[in-house]
Amino acid sequence: IIWPDVELIRNEFPILQQTVNGNPLVYLDNGATTQKPVQVIRSMQEYYTGYNSNVHRGVHTLSQKATSAYEAARHQVASFIGADHTEVIFTKGTTDAINLVAAGFRKEFLNEGDEVIISTMEHHSNIVPWQLACEEKKAHLKVIPITDKGELEMDVFESMLNPRVKIVAVTWISNSLGTINPVKDIIRLAHAQGIPVLLDAAQAAPHIQIRVRDLDVDFLALSGHKIYGPTGIGILYGKESWLHKLPPYQGGGDMIKHVTFAKTTYADVPLKFEAGTPAICEAIGLGAAMAYVTQLGIHKVQAYEHQLTKYAIEQLSTIPQLRFIGEAKHRAAAISFLIGDHHPSDVGVLLDQQGIAVRTGHHCTQPLMERFNIPGTVRASLAVYNTTEEIDRLVQGVRKAVTLLG
Ligand code: PMP
Image (tube, rainbow, N blue to C red; front, top):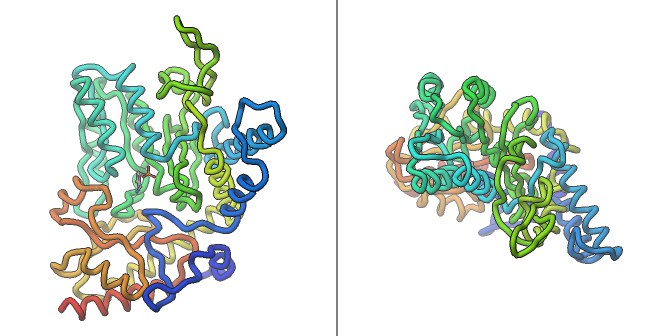
């Protein structure tokens, strides 16, 4: 596998240089959260040691520095996804970003009898906000079914589109199955009927290039911590026309133009959606993370991870007791499986004893687990710093677990 820099890359992630339970750490829980390179850690340390100050309101030097760095991070995010900086709203993460859109639709655009379309493979954060909105407005939540391989049934999706549908909200990459959904087709089909589309790009951002104009997507949400950045920060991209139409999410400082007790006017987008002191340090860290990935080259990252995923699937396939959950043609970075009838957490504990970190359980996709009639899966999810040697350790580890579980 051609990725000559992998040791150099690993050296940039201090946390990877440790042993866990007596073995060198193999971190394969990147779908839950990624580790952070020194570039990100340093950017955050520089903020707190050099220019910690509140943004947007200060005339003094530190506040101006903080404001410039915060807004520079917004520009960095914008260029990472191919948007204009006025279309990038800082949020707490993907969940917060989806809630922002769902709250706006609930208030302004969703009425009794309307429909919202999501899919079977959504994370709870792209189910529950829409469910809450639909319950309140007596609208209907419609779910795109999936095949046994874990792919969307696109012909069914097409037949679900009708004038009552107010938004389609789907994930780009499934966190549980690794499926890459045909988002361009989804957007084209929805737009043909005048329906906007929100993409949950939480799992896409670290693995594939995002070009929002090219996609023509209306809303896109992602989390900083899944793309080598800090927790507590993410973004919502919204087409400018939508951001003007969408009502404010929360009220408070920074999101206003003028306040009187009789009436408040709001700041321009994106600040209209950023009430209160934002996560300044985290935004700066996210900017540094996206600069880091840009410097690596997202296409190189994708090509490397694709080969590594293929290798992992091939190697894991040699274990007779192992059954994959999700076998989509187009997939990225996440591999879910079960060992015989053993509970996924038993396998996870045995892997942890060998220093191998995987996630077990329903991965916040309970309806998807129900679709496959399973309690959960063991999920190995990859990142740029993983190696073929680590995949070999995983395979050995699973073999050992198979033996121990009997
Ligand atoms: N969507 C997907 C596909 C995810 O994988 C996750 C995180 N596991 C989320 C949404 C939620 O992201 P966050 O918890 O960072 O808001």
